[in-house]
Length: 507
Ligand code: SF4
Ligand code: SF4
Image (cartoon, rainbow, N blue to C red; front, side, top):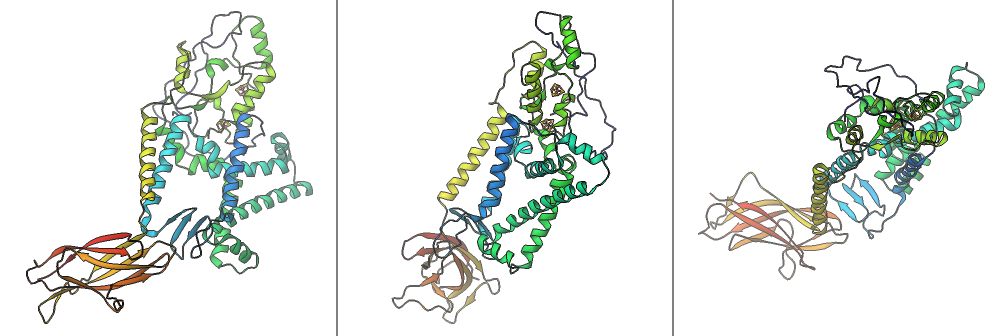
């Protein structure tokens, strides 16, 4: 998507011949992007006073705000019964136990590839959203957008809407202004503190940690993290706001490189809006049968914009595609009796089509959306398969480095190994161990006598690993000096099986 520094609507657009309908702009000319942009890379911040607005997109934003914040704040309190030997918190990052719990899924440290798979899925979903409807993530779901929206709502509630707040800011400091500012910052800090507080609840049993925090018995690190996140939330959502999107976040640049002319973006339909002019002027022109656009230059779309963008200047890196300017303009259009969606989710291609007098349309299925959807389906399928066939026992082996082997007095060769057995069940299990690939080879646990019935078995506690030293002795004189061997781990009760390959070394 080109940015505002690269695309501008040229002045003096051509006018359509007068007709019985209000005449509109026929073919606005889009100037070519300048070869070089030598403007400043940073401009001093101009305080933005976004005006409150009502409409479809505002309702969607409210719904998503309540949903995302509700999930974030309440999720740690949801319980999930995993049995007597596991925590009952539905979503928990158990750092001491080195586990990640997500409802029925339990991820062990050696299974971080699930996290990689999730990251691939998240990236592809973001790319797909971007290819279909531009910066949906930025406008509706990004934490920076959601918390800034919440902070702006608090600000409007205390300081008044745009006009009132601007007036108040121009007045000298009074007790009343001080009290309002104090209350606003207090509420902001309250929200920021609650945000940091909710974050640490994902790392311990939430109800217990809440109690410990309230009675000052929680670990120091919990208070430290709450402090850090309170500070960052307060600064980013309360003070920096759109500056984060403009200067800190890489996603606007990435998505600008990923989008195409078919992607839906919040667009000012200049083919319909220009030439703009005040309502009075536009009605006078209309009465004389002269061409006039639908934009009455009321600036409502600019006043409601949380990033201070004038969407009529064309695509802009600062536009987070929140759709609030659509609501504002729709309300204006309704008041002046003109059709809605002068600003709308539209494509660059449709603008060109309308300029050429062709019908507009939207192609959702195209190579890039099909490719992203296919990658999501394949990655999702692989992850589901991996989860469905996930082994609940495991074995890993490290061969002794020094010595690699020893020859016994009777001429037999002996190798030593350290074996780690993993039991992912929430109950104790007894495993037997055997080898293949070394006929006549004998396996012994170091320090663990065999069972009374002669079986070589080892017990591993619920959701635990156990490390054992194992000796393998080869009495077969005809064996080659070195060969691969396979260790077989079998659950004595269920017969579930895991195996690992290593080497048996000789001279
Ligand atoms: S709100 Fe609509 S009519 Fe008013 S300036 Fe913006 S585009 Fe023009
Ligand atoms: S220009 Fe419109 S869509 Fe873009 S950020 Fe501003 S209000 Fe949201």
